Image (cartoon, rainbow, N blue to C red; front, side):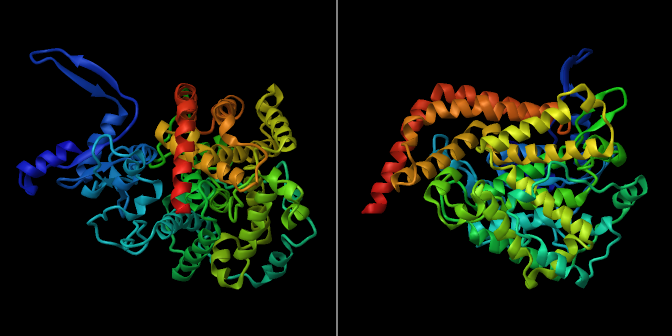
Length: 543
């Protein structure tokens, strides 16, 4: 960014060249000759160079991977997606972004951490691109003046919209309302079973043949229509309003989880000939048939992807700010109904009942058109949200046994039956949402520290309100080390061993290990800082 600032101060705009950036592995070396020089080589350098031809003077254009890194670094306010995909020689169409760092985001070194780290959702309020808005554009136009929640709503709408378009495209573009499904819709969730009792160990995914996948790849995007998108926006807005104003389990957390889900889905890998598993940029042209096979069908089925992202958005709706064990102890009405996984089951019921209202008929028509797809969507939502209950020991035991059956035995790895593929896909989806639910532990240190502080504040508030058996501050340091050792790091290793997410799984594991080590060094002091911050805020609110 400093180079563009220098150019702008000393050269007219017509002389400032375009800049392009791509992130990835490179080879470095010194070229000898009349003028020895240090140079970088590789696909990353070639991509950045070829992106330059589609850039604009005095602007920095970056790839999807670089944009992801900036978002994870708390700099999401700097990036704005280009309205149209750009053609890059040798790569095909790519989604690229402009870097637009506004002056108001510049903070002096040493400024307060909270003021320097741009929150994830502020991307929607960042400086807008000068490109002309077009119908179907996924830029977040006209968000100036919106509050945080509304900006987050817009961001989530723009995440879900292209997935809805792919769902419609996968069935030939039909979006008409189906009146024959009304009875089935009314029966789902009202059949005398709790949400947890609907859980199934294997969800049959839909299979697409090579012609289907090629048609979707080569066909222009389908517009889901103004009414459907308006209903989607209204739905997400209503869901956002159902999240409580608490420190951790709020709509910003749900959006943070959604961002991780989106990232992992976009980084599914393929098997290269003779090269094993290789990273696949989501913007590159790939063999969709190979990709679908290696991801156990997840990558080829847009309804599955939509359901997982949808589940991330709704998974903590109306969260009470206390763990399930406390809800069961208090024996309130929800605890009496659900018995266990109380918060998760309630979230599914609330979100599903809302979706079934008459005002979202066009939205439902985009999601599913047949009873088979409706029931599959429901099952995916149930399984995905239920997977976020990571405390229940019985559920943990069942997941461990299912993982071992799918991935840890020689027979399982060699089993290529449809049932085996579906079992693996179901388990991968559950671990994907689990990793995303604690994504802050597998991201940059200051992101982890921010969310860890928020979770402490929520738990300590519950203690002060008499809704916790013990003072979390007395054991927070040691408990967090145990959380890394017995949950986060093993989970990151499972993402790695399932072989679906490529280098992202390595990245998650590396960050988890680094954060664990950093917490060992700084955690005790940080807990005291968290406690002091809580007491200070509590004293101010009392005055």
